[in-house]
Length: 417
Image (cartoon, rainbow, N blue to C red; front, side, top):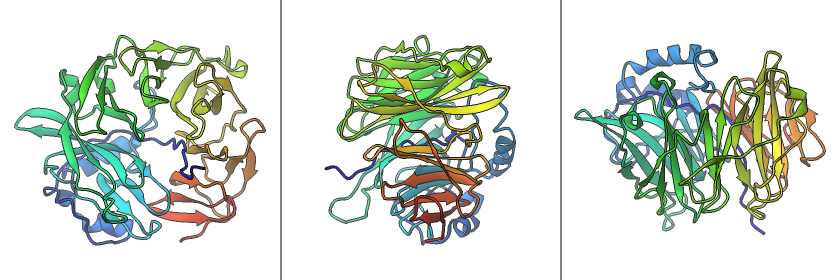
């Protein structure tokens, strides 16, 4: 039986304008705590960060929850979990890519090979503890480009990664190389890798384009502009197979769910209707969907989350498919006090799941998607949590304020490792 865990990690992972340090050497710096790491790295020595961006972050954070300006979900977290499993953790914190292999007690800034001092770190994605991609905006001699850096395990040395490879996407339109472009990424084992780009809200109409790599990010080709096929603001992309995949979206002012499917590897897309749950019909609600994830052992079984928003609040509803995504059935909603943007997940090997309340005082868990959610009162408030992970045996950890806490009793007791 496979032991790997597939899970959904739903957090605000907004692209941030960040820039400038010395060129990356691919080597890892001395280990420190996360706060000490950021104190030691002055703004002009952080890879992918400029001196002016700290002031920008203050502005971005204060506006992060203002939904009135566009259809875009809130963004702007300084702490972006990319991968959490307690043994190999990756985050973007204050514009710096950091790694911990010591249960979050010690962190090391990772300097990426061939990344220039003027490059701005946008976002990242890790599909396993040692396999990841990070995305940079480059303005080299007034010729903007979007650069993807990729690393994978070095199988000759346990726990080590290979040197980072870098490649610029073969972009064709000016908006694709804007510093506020958003990147949504998907890659899994032998399947092709996809990079979905969307323009910033300031560009007016939300532009979208899609890129594909058949060699896990070494070489890329453009599949086309998807703007005419995809409405709304993309929130994610995922694939069940090399041909069948989905793009999830958010859009205001319409009582329907923006959710799109491809059956030809991303070349064409069409809207796939999802049932709008009866409690939200006629309530002025709109929906934000999050890209689905499928069971490793049965790829006909999958889960996606939709968040329904109206004047009364926000409610997170899981949808389940048993037929490879042909039909999606809404399940028991989570209470309205669940954190938004949500921190929630599903472990598909044992079908246990979790979600956190906005005030951090309540943890919701589920052992059977058809039997509803159970309430747990953790030993301490987790309000400032930015990422969470659970295993089927009840052990798990949470990333909070740049530190990890661990549990071995299903979330009741949380202690430093």
